[in-house]
Image 1: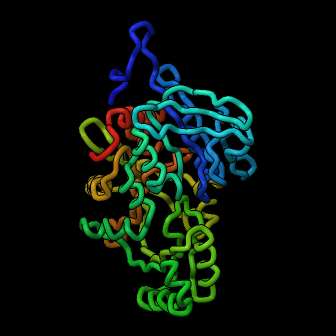
Image 2: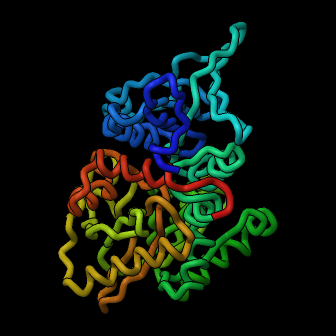
Image 3: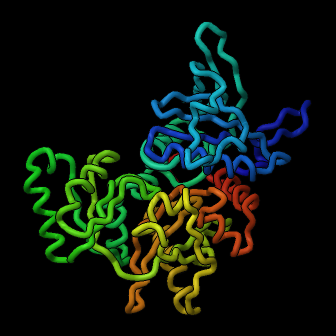
Length: 385
C-alpha cells in the first residue's frame, strides 16, 4: 500500500496519511520509548503526514497523548513517562479490531466515545516486552493496520536472546558462548541452575554477563567478575525477566551496523564503533542514555572489514525475517572475526542513538529516515507475506 492508494472522497481534496505513533509500554524500557518517540515526533514531516500520539502507560492503559515532543526528554537524569503526558488520567484509546475499519476511538468514563479518525499506519516506538516482542504486532495484524518494523515472528526472535542466537547459528552466523536458565529450572532446583552457570564459568572463564533474556537498552545486565557477585546479578536480571541468559565475555571491539528496508530490499549503513566508556565497566544503560558515551561514526575499519560487517548485518536481518529496520551489534575479535551479539528490531532513535547516527553518516537525514520507514510500512500489507 502506498500513500497514492489511500481511499479518497471525490468531493474532498486528498488527505494526508495518518500515522499513529505508539509510545511507552509496560516494559522496563518505558522511559526510553518516550524519549525515542519525542525524536520521531519532532522529525516526522507534518506537511506529509497527520500524526496521532498514543501512549501505553506502565500498567497497560492506552492513553491519548499530548503532541509535545519537547517534554519527551531525559531531564536531570529522570526519564519521562506516558502518565505525565496523557491527556487524561482515565480516558482510553481503542484501536480497531475489524480489518474493515481503521477508525480509532477515544472514550472517558461518563462521556460519549469520540472518533479520532482512521489510522493508515502505526509507528510502534516501543522497546522490550509487550510491544517490541511481537505482541503489538500480532494485534495490528488482526486489525489489518500496517505498521513500521518487523512482523510477529521476527519481533519475537529479536526480543529473545536465546532464540535469536539459535536462529543465527542455524544460518551460519557466529555467536559467542552462552547458557540459558529458564524459569522452571530455577523454580525446580536453584542449586542445580546456579551450578550450571558456575560450570559454564569454569569452561569459559570470568567475567560473565548476566542478562534478562528478553530485555534491551542494557537494562538488568551485570558484569560479574567472580562467584561472589553471581547471586546479586541473577536477582537483578530476574527482576526484569524470569528467564536469564549468561554470556561469556567476547574480547574485541564493539561494532554496530544499521539495516534499512529500501524498495529493492535491505541495505546496510556505514558501521559505527562503541568505544569502552570511561566511567562504566561496559556499555550499560547509564553510558548509553545518561552519560551519552559517543560512538565513532564511521567505525575505523578496513574496507574489507566494513564490507564484511555490512554483509553480516544484512544476513542477520534476513535470517530473522526482519522488515523495516534493524541495528545489528557485533564484536570484532582480536583475530579479526566478527561475532554477532544481537539485533534490535526497534533500536533507540533518540538524538544520541547510534541507528540514526549511522544513517546520517550514510547520507540519510533523520527526517528522511522516518519517512522511509513509514513509506516501507505503507507499501507492505498485513497478513502472511
